[in-house]
Length: 113
Figure 1: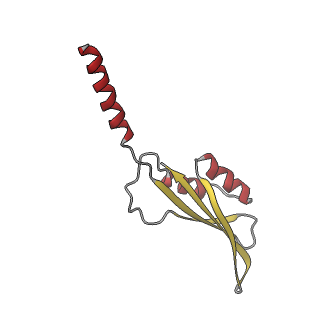
Figure 2 (figure 1 turned 180 degrees about the vertical axis):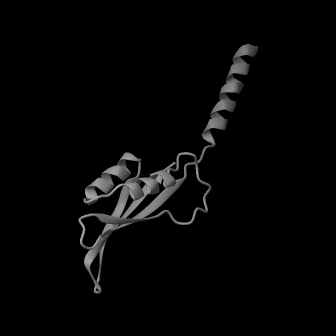
Figure 3 (figure 1 turned 45 degrees about the horizontal axis):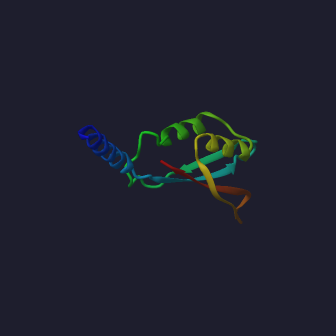
């Protein structure tokens, strides 16, 4: 009888301890511009201010390093890469400026940790 009570108490403690992990949602804004006289895209990333403590799986530096070392010609390549890293596309829009003939594509991504 004591073994059953001890097992029950341990089970309750373990489920309470493991349940206390809160999920954190991170957002990313990405803007893509065409480079004049080139077919490549210029990519700007913004993860906002890091007011929320980052987790080990938050791969911001990895993503920035990847985009600096690779050249992209197609927006779909960028979207496929972000999806492979676990980011979900939330919204997208195109911004145009009178002083610039090239439109700027803006993508908003979200990832839960």
